[in-house]
Every structure is written in structure tokens, then in C-alpha cells.
Image (cartoon, rainbow, N blue to C red):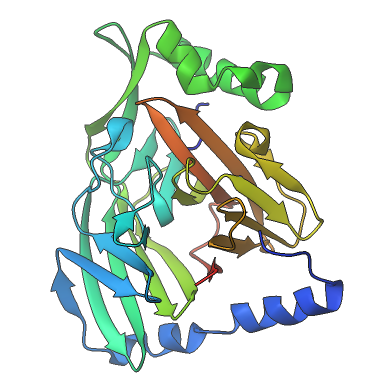
Length: 313
């Protein structure tokens, strides 16, 4: 999972890239526009096929229950040949709220699904009712001084690449520090609508139901498993694999993708005005397994929309 405290397709010429970007981003917004007219059904879990071999899956509970984020909600999960390939990732389109002094995650949700022609619209209402606590041995660290220690580790980690051979989470593990997520009075609800039209996903997050919390930053996470999607490529012809992807690096390219090496299968996102797009990856045996493209958004936004393209299906 990404750090709050704390890698293609063939190269395309610029003309083709611009054309493909425009087509991809215009693929399914009409599904979101007509959302209020759809007949939604409340579901516990739902799988949307996008090809003979690939699908997208959503849960109302916190499945898959993987390692440190077992009790947190996930977004859309990629499925290939019947197997979930999310690893310890959060899935596509998962909101995180950074407030003062807490960071809020979701542990509770409701999921509604409607079919629209050949496409599907999934609406997931995330109740932001979990906060993180760091523990040293069995003592919970809640005071300001203790939290500033982890903030300082995160600063060093982001600013000094030499620290990156030790991930922030693995570093804290080595000194017997762990992160837990505890239930707390909710900061409100974030409603995320996913319009799925073949290989295109339009994501719209609505932040209008948040309470009067001191919101500082919003993140929209888009993560799957790091042992599957090991190759990073972007529109500036940057190509990275595995650990060279980095853990929390800004992306200046127009688009970025994560794919299976020597295959086209993967996903692509685009840079959006008014946000920061970053790439990240962490793998630690039996503990960490995520790779993703994350947006940081201003707390002034009441909504945020973006598109995801599933490649090689």
C-alpha cells in the first residue's frame, strides 16, 4: 500500500498517443451522466467481465483479506483467468483522506450495481471510519512526538533516494513497529462511481458527504499486485521494472501504464489538471505486494473524475 506516512505497450508516435488518449477518456462518461436513471441493486459482491480472460470485481466487505490492509475496503479488483491479481493492493479508485490530525480509511461500505446497455455502473459508498495507529511492540503510539517520528521517516524516504532500498514499512518492521487500523467515528462518506464500458473505466469520486473535518489532502489509489504488473511505461518513453519503479515518485508524463512484462496486459491512467499523479511499488515477502498510480487532490475539490484503460484485453 502507498505511503501516507511514509511498474507496455509498444511506443506510439505523438499523434497516435493524442488520438488514443482522447478516445479513451471519452469512452464512457455518458454512463455517469445517466446514472440517476439507472435501476441499481444492492450487492455483496459483483464481477463484471471485460473480455474472455479478464474481469473486474467489487466487494462490499473488505475482501480480499490480505496482510496489513485485510480490514480495509478495496476498490475495483482486476481478475485474470479467474484469479484476482490485486496482491496487497487497494484496487482501482479507493479514496483516502488526510486530515489533521488523523488519516481516514474505509472499513465499511455499500455497493450498488446497474447494467446500462453493454456496460455496467458500480456505485460504492465508502464510510471513512478507520484511522491508522502505529505500535511499537504492543504499545500504541498516539502522541504528537511519536507521530512526528514517522512523518520524519516519510520525509527522508521521499527526499533521499538512497533510503529506498529499505521501504518505509519494512524499515519500521525491522524496529518492531507495525501499523494497525482502528474503528473511529466516521469522517463522512465518499461515493465512488465506476462506469465500466469494455476495457474503459470512468471513475467519479464525490466528496460532498464529508463532515467538517480538517481535510488537508485527498488521495485516489489505483493499485494491483506488484508481482504481476512489474513494468512501468509512460508517454515520455520512461521504462522501469520492479524495484526501479520507485515508491512515491511524481509523474510528469501525459499518461503512465503498468503492465505484465513481455505482455500488453495491464492498465493506464492519465495526468489530470489540479492533481498530482505518482507511481509506487513495494514488495516484501508475506507482507507487502502492491504497485500503483495514485492521484493527490486538493481538499477544495467536491468531486474528482478520471479514466482508467485496461490494456491487452
